[in-house]
Image 1 (cartoon, one colour):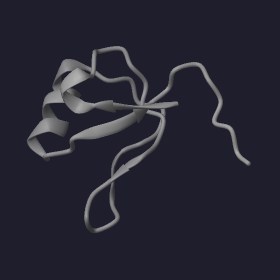
Image 2 (tube, rainbow, N blue to C red; image 1 turned 30 degrees about the horizontal axis):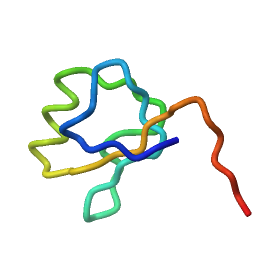
Image 3 (cartoon, helix red, strand yellow; image 1 turned 180 degrees about the vertical axis):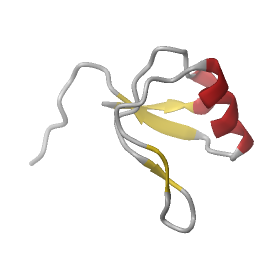
Image 4 (cartoon, rainbow, N blue to C red; image 1 turned 135 degrees about the horizontal axis):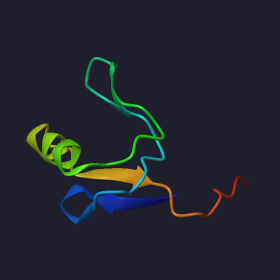
Length: 61
């Protein structure tokens, strides 16, 4: 998993961590594949970065 700026997202990337709003409601669930429309919506909500799957597992100490 890695952090990617919303402006650098490409369609087809997969969300690695659920995105929540200020109220704690889920906006997008983990595992969603980004489309151009979803990327534009994230930008409209001023979400500046997301975690995406990159084929590597997180290392937990």
